[in-house]
Length: 333
Image 1: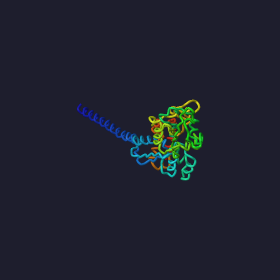
Image 2: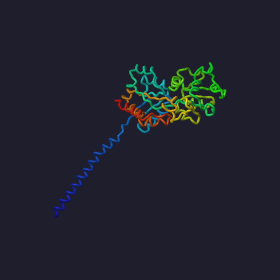
Image 3: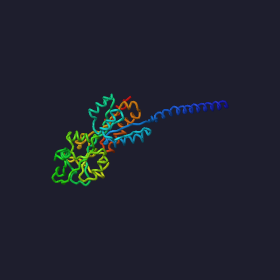
Image 4: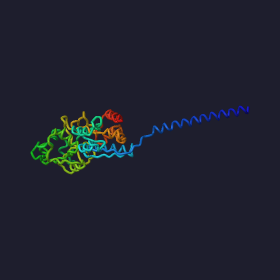
């Protein structure tokens, strides 16, 4: 009987040891797996972005979110020299991304090709969102809150009313004040100027009296301080300055339409003044610099432009568009 008891105790001890060892082995096997799954590659380095002042608030917001939430050792520097000025830096390889509030021009494509870069393979074009070109006036202007597309175009075209381009509000509509209109807008460095000049004015000369500025903040102040002022720029700058300015509702033929995120779109009521905004990626830089590649993925992911466009006054594109861009970036090896 004593031998049987001893034998049973030995069996119990052996079984306990096997279970314990088995459990220990399981823990040792699972921990590395879990650690591997939780591991996120930590990157460092610098990403340089420049170009459109219109796109700047959106891209700067994307960069901030990326550095805070994704890779805090990567420095993403975002400039706002203007679309044309940005391409002048991008073509020789001084920047990794070039933001633009209009599509790249043939002469800029040719410049890239001279440097051995072909758009579509060595340079990728991404539409980030849709912007509504917005006509803004002073808060105290109570007569020009609604205008037709033709009235806006005609008032900005040189020579429509007189040779010296000193246009009065009453020239546009007889019942409006006999006060000279003060025209403002972004200068030639900006894609917004080029879009307005090429697509809206159909490449007709802008009024000689127009005061064109490099900084959008300057334009906001100029209009905010002049009852007879009128200016054009991206919807985002208007949204962020609604306390200082008011937007003109534009009649494209079916009644006045106020620019909003619900009306801005290529098939929506404000389509007449809607345009896409872009960023361009140097693929060679993305191959050479993991930080550039990783940031590119973030920009076109659901965390980037898709999520933050609306917060910065842009209408986001359909999710499948961003998905296609993400596939392109993930294919960079």
